[in-house]
Image 1 (cartoon, one colour):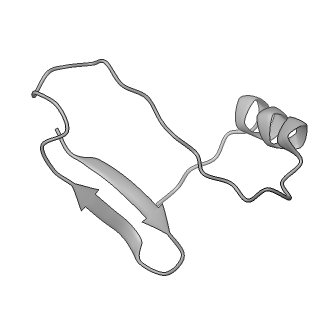
Image 2 (cartoon, rainbow, N blue to C red):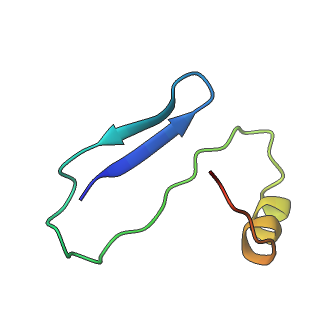
Length: 53
């Protein structure tokens, strides 16, 4: 399986060979700046539908 990292400067960057094909274990990591209001971020991520293309 392939993973991705994204940032403004480089866009999406592929990270190949993270896990075996068919392995459904995993998740997502979000890196945010220290000045983000974390409760607003949680509310947004749990309550809003967002399509990233």
